[in-house]
Image (cartoon, rainbow, N blue to C red; front, side, top):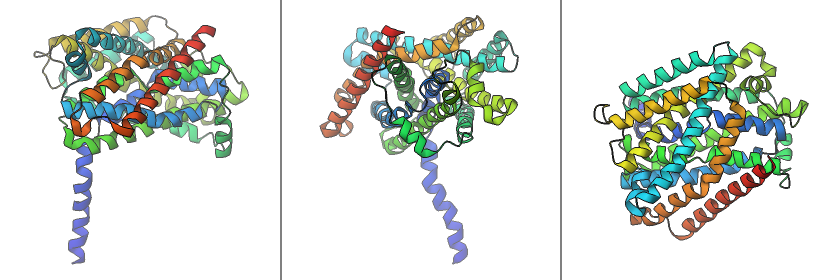
Length: 419
């Protein structure tokens, strides 16, 4: 009898874990992409200029991020349609183009920051920008043209795991918990420079392309409404992980340059690497930073370029899934390829990654009313009755969305006025 029981335990464990492993992926991938090069730069600037005063915001954004992406998952699983498809069918092609326009702006800005992040990593080790761009762009084009959604998801998860290097860097700072809590509660709401970075942090967490990508990804993965509970777990886990990484970068820079030279700007990727890693030694520090930035940049590059191609495909009506062969969806694969090549060519020239990254996240904050407005209206009008957003929770979601979008726009406009 003991032998039978011992054999049954692994079977029971596999029976419980296997369904979740089959569903997990879209939430984790989009959240790892959320902690992209622009987000890392924004978190580093936050810690360098304001110490731990923006740390509390990282925790507050966890439930906000989950609420937004859970609606996206719910729409994808219950309707079987992408975000652009739903807006076109229920609000008209004009509104769909407005939504995809915000997506295009967000994706273009994100793509440039991701590729610039990789260029910066290459420069850390003496590799010219153009060589890094040729290798990266060619590799990503070949991967997407020859692989299925499942294969690309596995690659993205494996590369995204490098982002945990930032957690190792933060732990090396050995900051007292009491100091983190005390300083995180000292919020200078009157300072417009602080508000500018607060807006950038909000834009770094809630991005238009995340809504489009995850809704399409759960469909490509073949998930349906019966997978909703596990898909929510996937999304919740991803929301916690992405904000832990953001907090880790902020803490690491706050503990170094934020303490020794407060309010000092970081103008290059090399300066961010040096600020993050003084306690580890130059070689080890640069390697860990390079791993983290590589994971952040490559995953986000895959996600934003695919999302842009999908978004246009949803509005124009051509095939836009990785489950279609390139011969079946030439426009989808063509747009993806042109975006990567164009972005790589621009980044091969001299571009200020830090200024671009923060500016793009502020732009995302300004786009929030459009993105979250469509998401909320779809959840109220399009979802089947058992899954429809309504009642007290619907009111709560409306309040969260209104506050997030309103504060993001207010902080961004006030910060831009001074910048």
